[in-house]
Length: 205
Image (tube, rainbow, N blue to C red; front, side):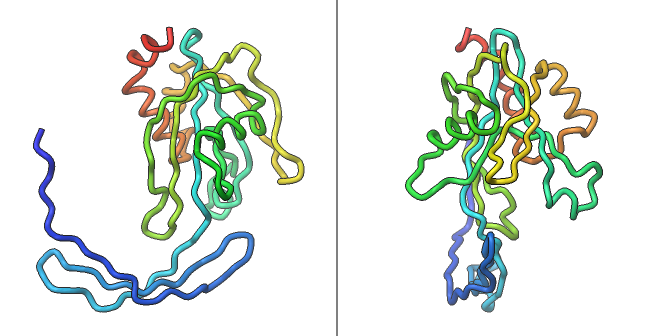
């Protein structure tokens, strides 16, 4: 299949100032960029939410054909008006300085779900919300033994109260179809598994 042909795309940062710093930070950036019809844009200003960079893993037991999902309260979900303001999610976290995505997902799997990841398969490297945030997420499928999975975990020091639940892949797909899973990273991970499940099960049999 031929790769899509694109015109020249160039962008330049003109200025950057810190607009806000708290638990997270917001930068105010000034850019100019090339235009598809030729020429250059005027300088545009955009505020960018700078949360850091993330990695996540969907734990999957190929022998039992089960996934492990976590559920927790999310402030953004509450503010968006979703009720109840709890989300089904995959295990994920923000990279610490010098940490690799692989190390992070192994660490977070233990902290959030008391799970050992036995093997990783890379899925995607995503922009989470590129119109407003610089956050990226490196996403993996993680092979686990789900027989003993389940319970409530998380770090009390970080205010975490995380429900860990094992569901069959069939039920996870049904939850997607019913709109019960609306966390974007979890949706992407489960859709990836739906596309590659037979291949993964052959590889991890």
